Image (cartoon, rainbow, N blue to C red):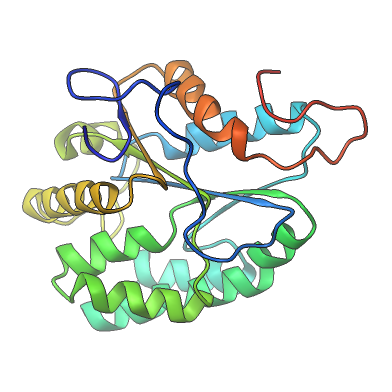
Length: 242
């Protein structure tokens, strides 16, 4: 079994897998979820499904992304994904800049209000893409991001695992700088995500991204429900199914 992986041979049962525990201090009233995985894995779809379910339970929900979750982040996103030649070290620092501002401006205030924050990518994207695939050093990139965020890690990280070739086939429109990288690059990303999940199984839930979206969503709900705070709407139910 690898990092709470679910689906197919060697995957865990989402009901019997122990719920994750926060690995750093978090505001006690909120819940922080990160969606990770290669390009085309379906993170946006799962984020939308989670938002709908959580709002139905009465929670304040903040759906965001990295890069681009703030006004400054949108400028940085354009530069790093659609700009000209950006060397790997500059790329890593741009992502860290976006992350520092994102956490300070949006994520921590929302958690402090008791909201459920669901982000499309977070620290582990930088560790896998810039640290491992760009060969800048996974430990160095992780330390940079932890410094930028004052050590903020999610309660739950959902890794949607998909073969890079299958992910590339799902992408519509013109690919960005990262999506245009070689198959070997994206394979290194995938392999390092597996390593991250294996190293922190309490925080990770690894799911087969070839599953139908509703099946993936059901597995995420099973894992997330015990971690949710009391709903913001009086009388609404916390956790469980809508």
